[in-house]
Image 1 (cartoon, rainbow, N blue to C red):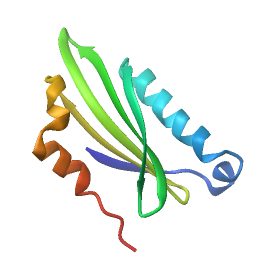
Image 2 (cartoon, one colour):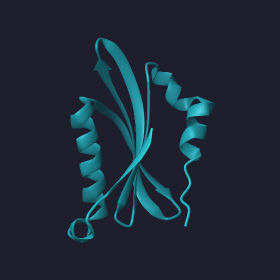
Image 3 (cartoon, rainbow, N blue to C red):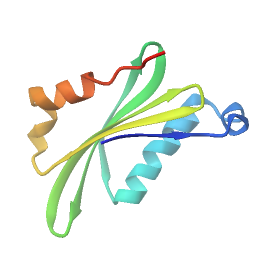
Image 4 (cartoon, rainbow, N blue to C red):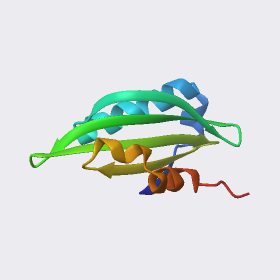
Length: 105
């Protein structure tokens, strides 16, 4: 899944990039009931972001996911993958999905 959300420019001006990315991570974990497993700094074309790996449950089914949060000006992009296999994160097709995201001008 790929989505984006535009922050008001005034709100972005009052927060550091780290605070914005921390908020995105924390909200994702809170909204999904997920447990953060690993976190990495991430960037595309010089735009700062964060990549997280997490786990959780949905109706007794173990779920594993990874998400990228990328801040571009006042827009936050969210790139998310969920699977019931912990090893899926390293599959070539999943890596290709994340690597396929490009910013256009």
